[in-house]
Length: 199
Image (cartoon, rainbow, N blue to C red; front, side, top):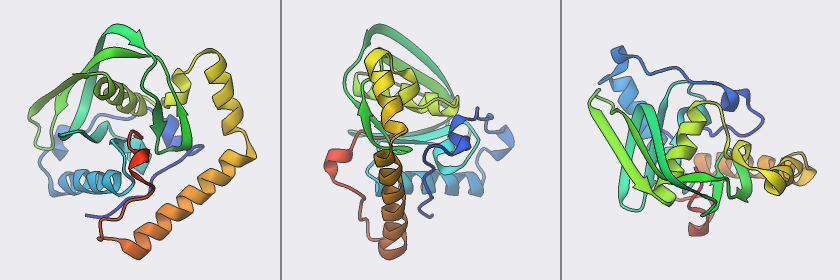
């Protein structure tokens, strides 16, 4: 296993539609290593979810760890229902230090397969539903800021075009690289527990 480099905007891989993970990869050692590495990377940066494009993988896969639920999904199909809510706030490991409240469905479910090709389903509401929608968006080339509307959309666009955001992204990427090289394997995490909720 290894901690992978997390891609940040404006890396074009974040805007690309992923391809399905082919059945020929199910159960392979390489796919298992990738999933383990994605989990390790997510844990290292105190995230709750991490999608393939965020580590430069153009295939439909994401991992998650939220509350006591931990898992991964390949080739997920997303279903949503219920009221549209704008809470709680979201952040994204690929859009450092920005937090907004895009409208999301109250309930969500993903159906897909695990590393061995077995059918899996994950369903939830509130923050868990928001995480599922966020990660599914990554696989379609969308970022959470793309879902914003009105003043928040304009505010996010201004923030992402600012010098402060460019500097923050550079700093965060440098901190992540330094952490990987200096404390790899120690279980240290970037940031504090307050950063949980990013994916």
